[in-house]
Length: 250
Image (cartoon, rainbow, N blue to C red):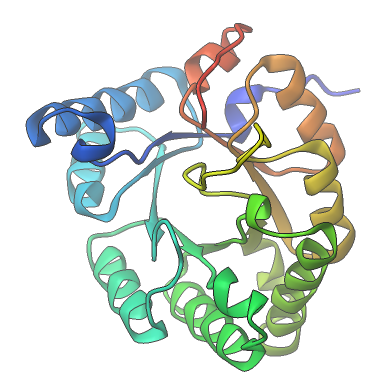
C-alpha cells in the first residue's frame, strides 16, 4: 500500500477574528502570516483564511514560488447570509485570486424546511466557483444536525451538483463537516467525527468530502483518509504532520 503523505491532505486553518482570539488586528494579521509561512515551509495543500487576507496570502505564496493554495470561507460562520451576500463575497474572493471557496450552507433554513432556498444557494454558489475554475466546499455544520439531517443535506448537495454540472467537475465539489465555531452543549463534538464523516460519505458520493475540526492527531487523520476523506481542515496542521497530539478545538 502506498504510504500516505499527510501534508497532501491538510488545509492549515486560521479563522479567528481579533475579538474571538482576544488580540489586536495587527496580531491577527501576524498569526495569518505565520500560518501561510507554515504552509509554505511544510508543503501543506492549502491555507484556509478569512476573505480579507486572501490577497496577502497570494502575494506571500507567489513571492516564495510555492504551490500552496489559498482557500477562504463564505457566509462564515452561521451560514445565514442571503444568497446574494454570499455570491458577492465569493466574487470578491475570486477577484483576489482565491483558489477554493468554502461556503457555510444555510443549515438553519434547511432545518426549517426551506429546501428551495438551500438548493438555490448550492446551485448559484457552486456555479460561480466552478465557472472560475475554483474548488467549492459546502460546510453543513454536523454538530447542528441529527444523523438523518446530515444524510439528507448531503444528498441535497449531491443531487443539485450531479444534476447541474459536468461529471468531470464533481470531484471539485466537497461536502465539509464543520466550521469549528458552532457551540454545543454537554461536551458534544463541534467538528468532524468518524460517524458523521461516514454518513456524509454514504450520501454525498461522487462528491469529495472534507473533515474539519476535531481531527487532533496523526492517527485519527490517517483513519479519516482511509475512510475516504480528501481533505482535513485543522488549526494544528504542523503538530499533526509531526505526529503530535493537539487539544485545539478546530
